[in-house]
Image 1 (cartoon, rainbow, N blue to C red):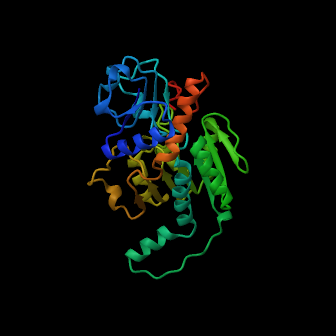
Image 2: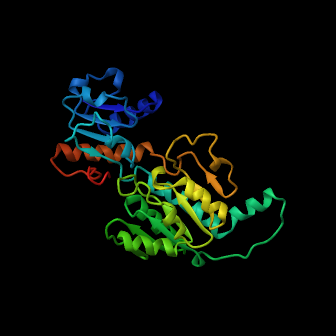
Image 3: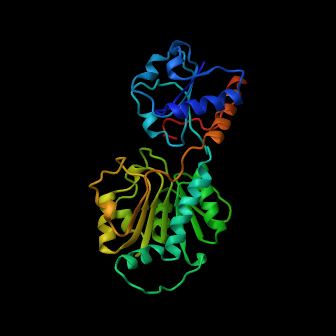
Length: 308
């Protein structure tokens, strides 16, 4: 028995239809019709507290998302339970679109024109070509690499950074502490698509944000706990940073009283940079279930020490 659960009953019903059509030989159920003592695999997002402890025969958990930081810190998560995250689920293309939107707006000065509009100013700014803009991408996993390749294809001067050494065609790839210093010093636009791990929490603190060039822009579509918002606001107010496009926050929803909502140099979106698309997610999970049945390795297995 395979249990499907999300907080939305309509979404669960849609997933059940897709899974049953894609894998008719297996039994897929929702929480209302599940015998928890018989559940072998769980496909889920937003689990009720304590639910995992009620499934003694659970053999694997497939998360309906790429970021699993909240899932991995649950007290009811069995220590040896394999957890699989989505490597894409239709999210790479969406994330690339989101970051490209931010970078293009920076290149074409759209953020500055919006500020001029608010002040009733009619003033043309000097145009720039994509090749004039240096973009740094923090995070070179499945999604981050797709973002970096898309930006490079657009003609931007792209560098990528990851915790350990990686190679992505047509761009400079940096890693480790020294590589982080290099990419910060060079990036006119810094796009962050990192997961939340013990190593990345608080990564973009005041010292590192100050290392960005004068007039740089920050895009955060990774996780909200990567970025020091107070430091960001201070550097925006001082003029060291030109702007920010933010999709994720330490507290979500972002409180209505937070100054980011009203800051003229900040664009806020409600965690929509990349949303799981059902059909690609189902295809990846069904492939994983079939590989498990055949004793084969499954992509997306979370390494608990790394958090992804």
